[in-house]
Length: 144
Length: 144
DNA sequence: TTGCTTTGGTTGCATATTACAACCTAAATC
DNA sequence: GATTTAGGTTGTAATATGCAACCAAAGCAA
Image (cartoon, rainbow over all chains, first blue to last red; front, side, top):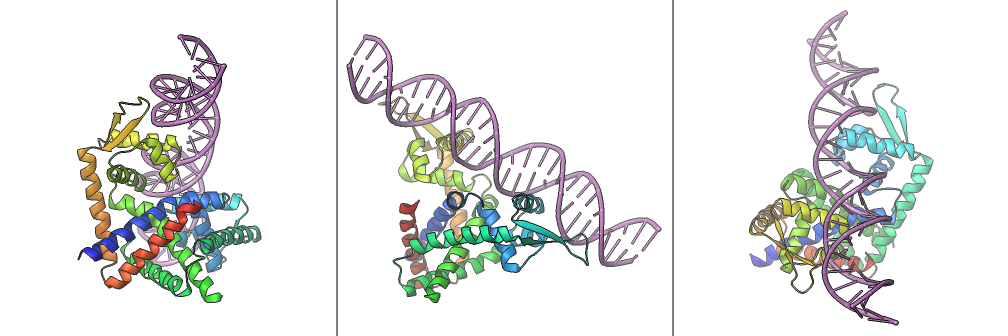
């Protein structure tokens, strides 16, 4: 069905276009937190702390990559490590006070940018768009 | 309005999640063409040739980055340069026959992956999702 | 014509991101 | 107690990217 193929083609093209710009946009918006750093820090904040291994599994990153990203965040004073009392191999990672502030600020900037871009959308469209993205990503999880 | 904010938050979160994975997904799907190479080559194909400067402007990349990406594509035999007869500074870039084939193949894989992910969506939802993404990106262009 | 400026591109750094493999330490298992 | 497994780090290499300096070809001005 041609119409259906057209829709799929547009979805592919537009999601790809967005993805291509996302890192650079994040870098411009909040240079102190790359898209990946932001994501990791946000996850720590969300989860009230977690292990490096969990981050690696969740974001399909190598554990060495996570290790270095976390080191960088620690050097910046955004993350602290707490050795788990029951298992001395494990470091439970938490945002510091400063990290939480920086995250909140970057998050606010991101949210504002999205809010601006979506300013003239009506509520029903916004809600449907959100639900479509949720649905799309939920499927994708399983294929990745 | 809380509901509206929720929708914006979800859109932000889900688009970001997609973006985070996109490069790695592309690399797994078609290792011979990174997301950026794919994009550049696709643009050349679309536009029936264009200059490196045009690519840089369109994708907000440094001209040195484009220069090197194009060199790589040329080394692989995917792109050829034609010096403009009227201006010897300018190289008009075109996909080669091979480049067009590789692009088509990568494009087919990408399209298939999207088609699979969207297999159980009904036509109306697909069309609306596509239109939302178009609308979103159209706005974004102006802010970037 | 002869210089100055602009434009298209390349190259020399410096950095960042990432994966893979080898390794270390602490737990878990046998 | 010895071996295996799990959580992390470090060495190494590849890739991506931007900035600045540079080169060559136009374009422009006097």
